[in-house]
Length: 229
Length: 203
Image (cartoon, rainbow over all chains, first blue to last red; front, top):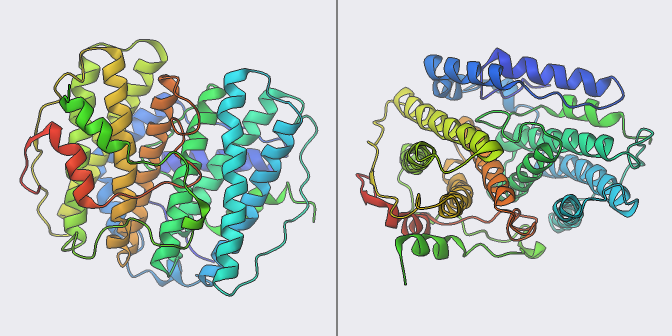
């Protein structure tokens, strides 16, 4: 167990994520973004108290934050599991023609390709490092996920924000600089996805000035409801 | 004609449209070993780029070129960049360092039209993504700073993607730059930014 690496140090951000998580646990994922008013309030607060001071203080010399690194291969297999979930989700959605708007399809189809590329690339990387890539779990998506455009994109938004937070939660735990670079290169793409999907559903493409992060157990708890076995 | 805007645009377009996955695990165009003297040097480098962006959006948004959703999004982007500036300044101070002053900037014809504003913004954001990724290894030993820099990097990627959407750019190669972000070394970033920087202490 380790503490959430909390770069924002702001109650508003944490509360927003707790809200979001509890909704994910509720079964039907509905992403609740922070309101613009609370966002502006947070920024004003951050400027005054100094987010930077929090950056420096938030886990320096805190062994709890880094004690459970578990090795880069474990981290890569964790990432691989999330990428399997996303790749399967988008593959089913796009092959099921849930998106009919031409521009929406154009914007979301590359996301499927990216997630599949992440699956392939991370699997290869694990193998190259002498590890064994985990098998894909069997996934189960709620009724309506691939027949209702809104449900599909709201679920997509939840997955993308979760993926961003998952990668950012591992940044400090990766022990090899090249693997860090690879993970960061993927994380940036997940951020692009998150923003684009948020825009499509009228959400907030820029929910905060900093990406949030989540520890493994929280991410897997959120993703677990979609894992059948 | 080779205007300032074209210079930075061309430099920004070293981003390949599609990145081969064989790059996974191979060497990135990360910062050279000699690129940065210290974590503080990296933070001041990031601060310089954030100053540039924050001032760019301040001037551009003041010019009133955008309406509707684009104007709303750009107001938020401006605030994000200003927050990054303040945060980096504060972090540098917390580490006992001295934050570099803001560079003198000249954005040329960037605010001549909505199109030129969006295109320059798009270039800046994609450049910022590449700059942060390129500098990340130089913060590798400083885990809290690394996490912080990564958290800014992700937001720059969001900005880059949404500006591409606002411009109605093609999804792949416009909104997205492939399945992996690419890194750019310091010298290349500064070369791309230099047309807009009249003078700066750290460059």
